[in-house]
Length: 108
Image (tube, rainbow, N blue to C red):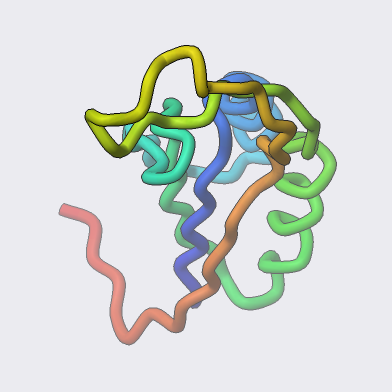
């Protein structure tokens, strides 16, 4: 058995959740936020049998698209003027996925 932990952008969360339900894959959703962009994310915790790992990874890959957006540079120094801020292009979306071995599983 494996634990798949997938961090996805909130925009992709509902679609991914629907697709996991359709594939009869149980998942627990946790609200999370990114450190760099400080934007909302959802972390999915998915326990699956070893033979279904590739299927679930494919569902995540198909439903969590990477895209580019512009954001204003963060002001980290109080001495910096707001007029010095400018938009930069960043990659958002997609998914960051960890696949971990599960030593035991219990459902109470």
